[in-house]
Length: 150
Image (cartoon, rainbow, N blue to C red; front, side, top):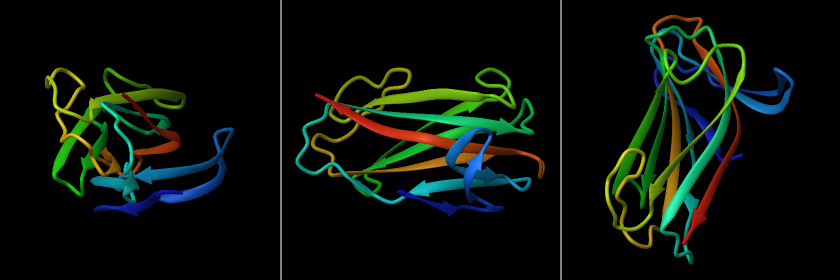
């Protein structure tokens, strides 16, 4: 896949099967922040105005103060953004949750989940971050897709 483990307190690990899904990655915070980062994905020869990242995850042991964040970088970090979801409001433990994030890949308004980006972005990198406060916090990540539209 396109992801590697990355970050402090990291114990990210690939599992052939877990919670009735095949090929998932576990990100465990170990009491701090852990992350799972992608390699750069080429957007060359595209003219996308918007990008959408969709994914599925299964939270384990998270409490109300814990967050799952998705960071992105366009053009090797020239443009960055993030979206965080709180376990208090956005998801529950022990069930699969599907979320997505959409943002501009060309100039536009910076509203809610949309982020300004340079026109003709050449590449994108993603990073899932789990901000937890104890060693029981973890998420399984599955079915990550990146879609573009004009």
